[in-house]
Image (cartoon, rainbow, N blue to C red):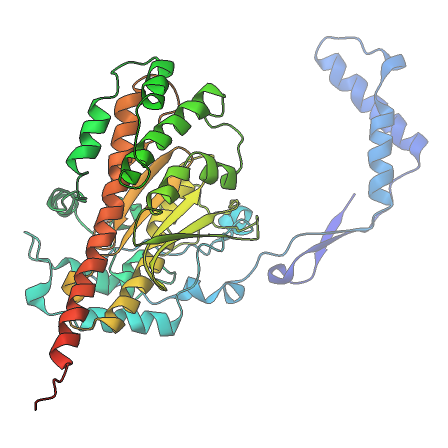
Length: 450
């Protein structure tokens, strides 16, 4: 058999068989002679009654029936997306480049929409934000570099949307490993304080202290059931009572630990007390549920898209909760169930900063001189865990909803204290801005004189 190639290699090859195979009988005779010779060299005797000629014959027939065999075409660099030819990063940064070699062709089909290309308009908006910053207000590291300047330089060349365009720095994001030195990363991590939320009032603290310190959930439930509370004056204590009893019922009914429950069901059942906290408040919690179950958005890596798109994985339904005062949103809660921690990371460090940044922009438009008084909060719910965030601080504390009787009381009390403080923190922002508006309105009031 003789082969010759035809066509241009860069456009794909086609191999044509120039000679026909000999007739089956002659080919089988040749194969048997070759087979016996090889077996004899091994010192063995061939049993011709059990040869595998039928396998070879099928292969020969399949080849002779197909005169040409096309090979796959390797894409040229000209056919790659524009993001692959982004300008090189500044000398001060060492960004990982977007790979264009054919060795990645196996994974190219699994690129996720999470790697959304950063439009020129959004890039310019972010650059303008950095350009307005003065050095006196920037964070200067011991190395002499300003954190904002480093993020600014990265933004000049990064092809994909990333929290850095909202001035959000998550030093645990692997994108920053080659940009900040280990010493700088350590300095940044140690310098960021934890998010401080207001504490519960004393009567709520005493109510929780009086709950029996036991892992017998029946004892705790009966204690709460036998504790009389006034509906009109003790709504906040009723919230504690009903929240704890509901958690006990979920454990007793084997709803917890979470296994295959749907996202909406988890939000309505496990995290019901979050919505209930705002019923005895000037704030309202409005829930919106997305209508599609096929958002392709989650990466299998820790890294968030900055210079490389992320591999595909499916989102499930995501109930979003907006915390409003009137028609203005002051905080958000993102709820999601996930098979691993990746979804939670994406919700925290991509979607939440976008929402929180938009909330900040809306509040600044209404209160342009009170930027320092505005704090935007968010909370991410993922299965039985939650994480509180603040726009200026991506390092939220992760808490877990108790799923078993072990350590039920301390875990549940910590969780309730956290969300009540979350509510109080948002109310404090509303009160502060309301007082400012009230004082301004009084100053504008003109009194008629006789």
